[in-house]
Image 1: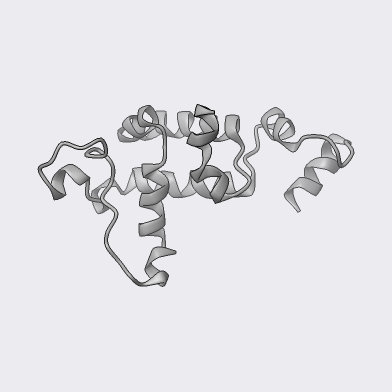
Image 2 (image 1 turned 135 degrees about the vertical axis):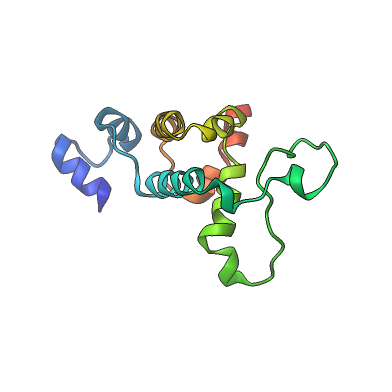
Length: 133
């Protein structure tokens, strides 16, 4: 529906790439907007989440990532807390470090999402593979 509205606004045909249109209009695709909203919630409620460095004393690559709780319940795994941690940990390292300054994080995150225009969460979780290729 979002793509159809953009097609009407910009008066383009079906074969035109939507990624450039989203960037041109400064609009996030629906899944990117979901990621943006969830990450802003995480940044504003940082005290609700535990960092891996607080869970164990080992200095690993992911010691500054948020701790992903162990769970077997799919209801919890689809929830805001669990899924938010997974999405946050998949952000670029420099972007995660700016999350302590909410206003800067908001700007940098929106730019990152506009530049990449993720149409699905699977595409978001695989973006690092596409960058290194």
